[in-house]
Image (cartoon, rainbow, N blue to C red; front, side, top):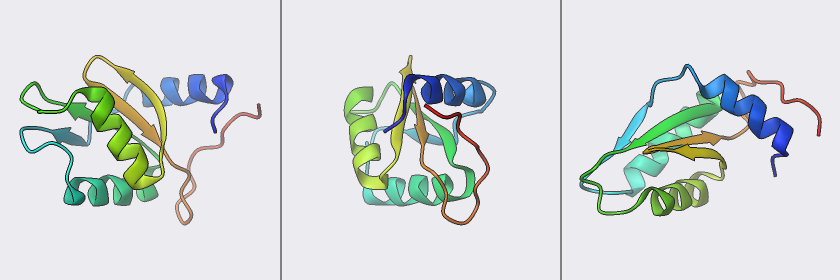
Length: 98
């Protein structure tokens, strides 16, 4: 579980990132969850954009991605979801202590 200080740090780190994934008319599926999981292993922190034609709202999308990937939800802002999961092989971010 991330602390407020850690979430703040991750939000600032994610600020300059572009969304790597877009969730559109097909919603969240197994391929998307697998792709996001792989990307989290390589990058630890990423953004996902929820398009207007997505049948699910951003809260549902975030819930499914967090559940499917084991990631932590850092923030949702507008139609963008920011996710974090510590990498086992490619550790890049050093989170501040609580």
